[in-house]
Image 1: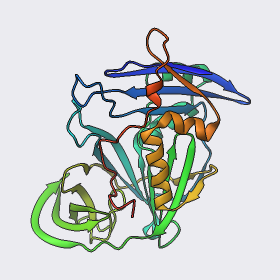
Image 2 (image 1 turned 90 degrees about the vertical axis):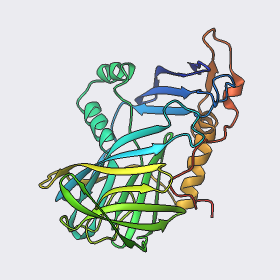
Image 3 (image 1 turned 135 degrees about the vertical axis):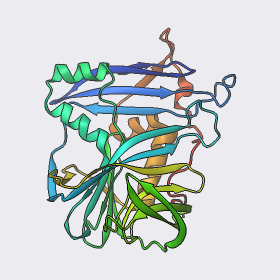
Length: 314
């Protein structure tokens, strides 16, 4: 049995280490119980993060020619009840040959590197110190395989992968201009997956790519934002001569489609403890500071945010 603690208002992170047959698994439970109003005690978000003491093997799928770092911000509470309504991560866009690219968390690369060069004791201490906090597990591959878009992501302990045709975005060019990192940029907008997107792209970098699934303009997309400002991307760094290979994890993916992926993601986020137990056979007992069980921690919550693709249920 794995026993964690829970503080009802605010957030608490507790760690537990256990040995499971041949490998050590480090459990970090982060429970955000921030109220819609501080008096209501309504839980808006729960998160169960599981860190393993090793990094999955990777397969190199292409050499890299250029890379771009984006600041990615997303709204975690569209009801504006949290003090800080946004999370963020630095994302890395790696450009390979033939239109192939990879968009993934730069922070996760850093965590993987730390784990690979550390002993088990050092990893455990890093977890205790909060240095193994992962970024986004979402990874987007364009033109891998050719003409297809591949999305991979870790949900709890499960790795998911789905493919779809490279989406055709119907861009409308506008007269707005700006400068990003010294590059002259022009604006464009389009409707995509239920959101209205406005972007700024630069023809000075003739790469028809951009953050996330956005692409198809005559230059690199430097910034992007949906109409509500719930999801934003901004290029904050460029490396014109990169030597980091484009890789993919060699893990047993659950192959699905876009709807199947979102179904799993939604099941996990509304009730992470129940999802963990159902998919691993393990058990979690959530207690308060006095050791009293908190059965309501298993109650599904209503997510206070929308996914980046609003049409996922269709």
